[in-house]
Length: 278
Image: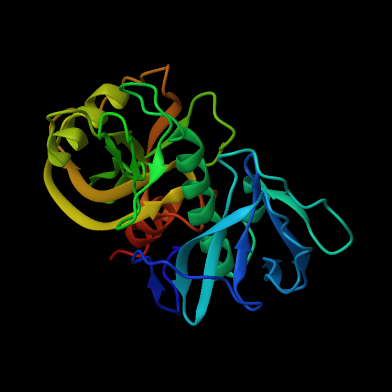
């Protein structure tokens, strides 16, 4: 999975000023300022940027290995550098399939933070302008005291098995057209295990048993924390598709599982793990 890095990721909160070797995370919508190289995606260092100007500040975001990353503060309408020969704005749909994985991970985490800061400019309770906390990564309303933290939505990825068969699906109405597993978001007051049972039943009409947690993945492209489960079919194998969610769903024998799936996600890893008999 793309977030399994060879360097340490440190996102502890602290105040820090960028150096010429620090990396700048600058976004325009869902695109990051970067350079495409033979090795993949390259993000600009502060030594490579033009003068930021008085209207654009940067927040310390995180550290990967020995490199610090800073996110451009665009909540107050700060200026952006122009695209040029060296750097251009690369959209998520392109860079998520590129390498190196440390750079893709940094861009994806930065984009998630960029979305959150942009959505947390004003208090949702009283409408006052929010400010940054001095002690943690949070936005605080000075008028009513509301505290907002970065958005993380818990969700499940479910591999439903029946002996040597695996249930595969395809999403309805999404840009992603490859094979996937049953997936869905946790609801208020619901355990993660109940989310697994509900999502499988809603999307396919199947019931499951013997839930086994596999691992989790921070899927920052959608501000989600994915929790992967394997489980077994309980009862009839007749599939009834929820057409608003899925375009197709079917059982595939271990040696017939298609390879047309994501290779950077928890979904893809779980499919390949079943294929190999693990």
